[in-house]
Image (cartoon, rainbow, N blue to C red; front, side):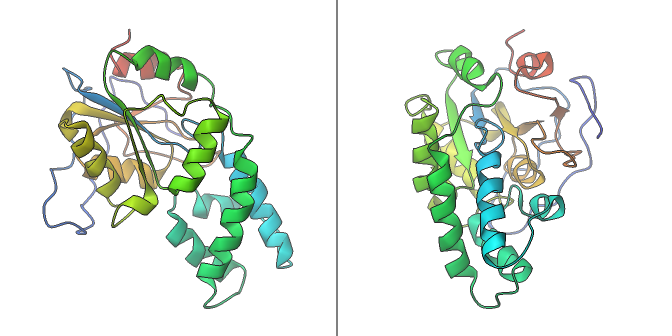
Length: 246
């Protein structure tokens, strides 16, 4: 996996997916924005260690249909919206036309597991350090009902100025809608905002929205070459340097 610090150049530009008539240009900055107006966190696998809960739920769901859940399945679904996940599961589980029903099963399994959600290493400390310095938000492809449970379990319910979820925008990641709506609610410029992401879909969404992106892969095999900065964890000095904390 390619690792890049703050001195590295950004990757190739990502073409906007054409899902909105008007969007800011893809962020081509090679240095973090200054002054920084806001920081936006992704949730699953970035802020909270919830991908393990998703994996547990996915393993259980696959077993119900006589299948074995594996690494390649995980890589295909990680960072996807629930709508997209349902369609992928419909195919993998050989259940044509049942995406909605399978999604309902998945949601029940995940929601049960979310009560044990915990922050990723360095997440709680980073949120606490940023609060009061700059507006912070959460922008997740997960639905509000799951995010509410997870934030409560991790004792982060009141930590964010704005929370936007995948069931609250017309198009989830990799479309930029979630990030554009987050910037609108925060009343900040996307190009003056840093997004923290762990998946290719999330990185694409944030860049197309015009934000500077710090990528922190949450699963072995994930590569984020389009992120402006790549780090191993939220505890990394590269992350803190990008956010102006060093």
